[in-house]
Image 1 (cartoon, rainbow, N blue to C red):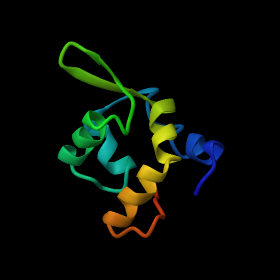
Image 2 (cartoon, one colour):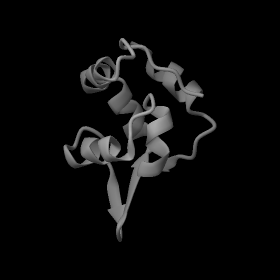
Image 3 (cartoon, helix red, strand yellow):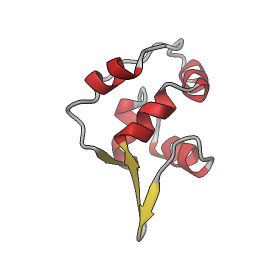
Image 4 (tube, rainbow, N blue to C red):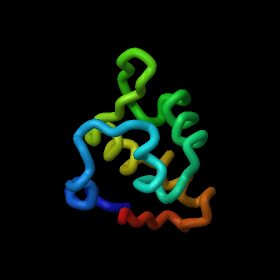
Length: 85
């Protein structure tokens, strides 16, 4: 599992507030539906403005450091290792 500093470094080129559509490439290629499920299951913290879900990068890193993220990667066949472009 990576450290918070490693995730912050990998995500430095992303905006501080992410939309659900920006999550799939960061999270190993999950589909938009899976991203919405993670949000609705409160696995990724977020806030909502109107009909737009916004995820602070810090909340995404919290999720990426969690066991839920490791299980998600295993389910995707990524073996617990995740790369960010």
